[in-house]
Length: 104
Image 1 (spheres, rainbow, N blue to C red):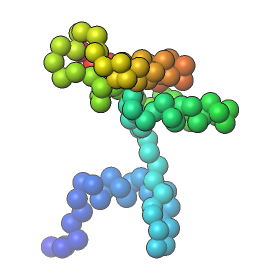
Image 2 (cartoon, rainbow, N blue to C red; image 1 turned 60 degrees about the vertical axis):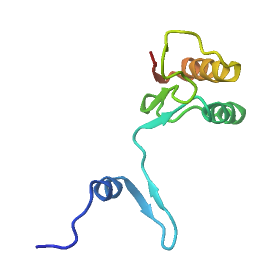
Image 3 (spheres, rainbow, N blue to C red; image 1 turned 180 degrees about the vertical axis):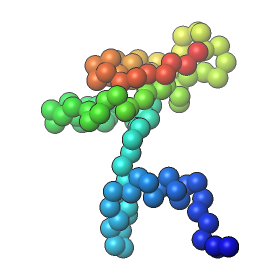
């Protein structure tokens, strides 16, 4: 019996390696990208600033998961910054045509 059993992580990783850099990181193919409301505004702004489109927008899935309440999600978000971040995510997803998974 082989002692080189691979974990599920190992198998998935190997299937997505595009290039192994000796002494460096592996370059991976990411087939689905998940984005959220906290750091995605900077990414969208950077794309707009450089005049770039999102590569494979149908492969991007967005969800607000940091600034939404655990309970009573049907109510408006109370904190202003949190409300702005969620609204900005929704606006960017409409503009860049990303799928959005809504909470609540």
